[in-house]
Amino acid sequence: MSSRGHNQAGRVSVFDPAINPTHPTNMWATCPLGEYQHDPSIGVYLHEPWSRYEASGAPYTVTQSGAVGTAAISTAASGVLEVDSGSTTVVQGANLQHDQAGFVPVAGTELWFETLIKIVDTYDKCELFVGLSETDTAIIDTSSNASESHIGWQCVTDDGVLLFTSEKATAGDTSAAVTIEEATYVKLGFHVIGITSVQQYVNGVAVGTAHATANVPIVAVYPSFVCQSGGTNDPIMHVRPYTVFQTHP
Image (cartoon, rainbow, N blue to C red; front, side, top):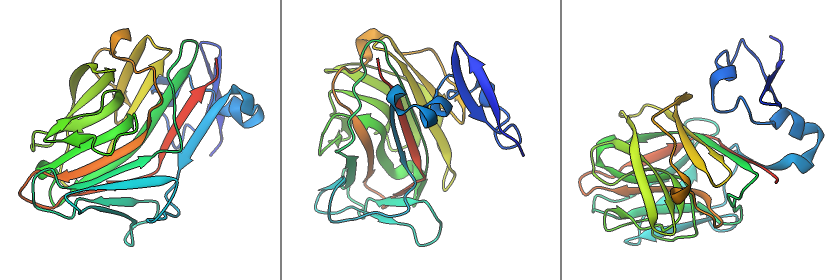
């Protein structure tokens, strides 16, 4: 195995073709992570490997809806956080935010976000959100997305159909994403260019057209994961490591 540099649009990224042969065409192709290793002034980098998690304190805050819902490191697999709704009652569950890591889309910057999730017990009985959101202790409220500024994926229809959503101060838009499957990981990512557009990626492939300027939030948004019950089962969201990178203007 050997690493290679990929230059695209004046940006240099590093990849191993034996591990990630699709890198030149995926969302990270123009992300200057390789340059960042030598010059941290390029941007800000957050990678959460879930090697540890403190349930009782910073930097993550779990808000319980209906006095239930937890988050804990998996005892069955390395690098996995389990966000458990802990309920069979509709809208009850866990609202998890890294509320000490805010990213603000501004002109002259680019932002990338990617993670993998799966839902168990069961995928089509879960109301969820995955992505970046303003600080909100009830992102999914009364089976709808109550966050006024966010970028990510939601399902509030109890059918496993994810919609990609981008919203700026309540001016938002949704687009088709993917239907998840029981106990099956799906890779979810997006790339924000300035305050102009947001493009989603599912399993490394661009999906649909980009969301436009009117739907790009211009306030601090934070890594957020919500897993609540649709009212039948008590679903659990498994979150594998996530990465956020934003260039400086």
